Amino acid sequence: MKCVSCKKPAEVKILYKFCRDCFITHYQRRVEKVVKKFNLIEPQDRVLIAVSGGKDSLSCADVLARLAKIIKFNLAVIHLDVGVNACTNIRTEAVVKTFCEERGIPFYFLSFREYLELPFDLEESLKFSRRPLCSSCGAIKRYILNKFAREKGFNKLATGHCADDIVRFFFKNWLSGNFDWISKFKPMTESNHPKVITRIRPLFETLEAENLAYSKFRGIPVAGCSRCSYFLRKDKWSQILRSIDEKIPDFKLGLVRGLEKIEIESSFQEPLRECKICGEPTNREICSICRFKEALRVKIGWEG
Image 1 (cartoon, rainbow, N blue to C red):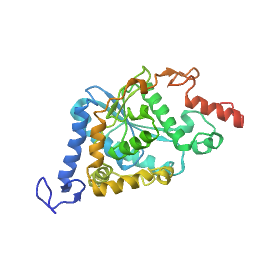
Image 2: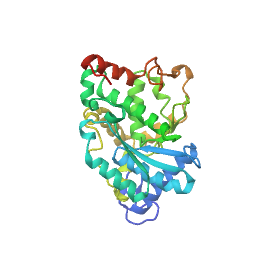
Image 3: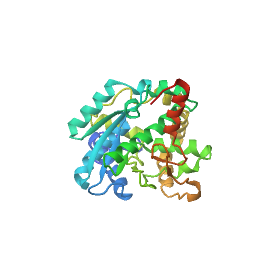
Image 4: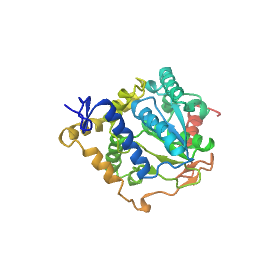
């Protein structure tokens, strides 16, 4: 098995066969191509990338650290501890800290409980709420990351969502008729409100298997607990996509490239307003975070 680029012995085969060095170059060029094709980052931008400590987000941060020197933008990393079993681990913070220090990237660590001034971590708090844990976790992450990025003066918020994530989310939302979410499955979700930070997904055309190979070849330390155990219990779509991959290897990349061209009518997208309690963007009179806090006040007499 030979590398398609240099003809040396190949060390990885995903869609193509590559040696270590050629794969790293291929991976970095693909991410750079997406960044430039969709104008995800421009000179002087202030980009905050959210990392979990896993292969996807740290691989993305590694490439962005390289591109920051080329495009001349400012980059910082944020790790949010939501306090859900496997996601809560001192090792994760240590891995992220080492990763950032080695690359000279400023970094922030935030605690869900401390930032929102709550009495419990997320997992304990949701015992007093009717909303599913995964749904609440996602809403809280979006709320905190957007608010923190704005407070610190960042104009772009990057995530490590890759093609596998996009395809999974697409099918789950499409089957539930949630077309508003489908409209957000693009390399960039531009701000539609003065308080909303533009979100970018540099790994939009990158496969999860490629992130694994890249992190291995680059020697990127990965926290073993970075993927939430609740996700692992419910992630049936990964099994379905693996079976499709066996028959159509380029299925996921073909789908995400098709999504890039889809335009969703604005009628599917609810206009944003400001929460009458906290002032953050929401499509309701009171945002989900303030409703969540109110549930805690009612159920346990919390006075926060």
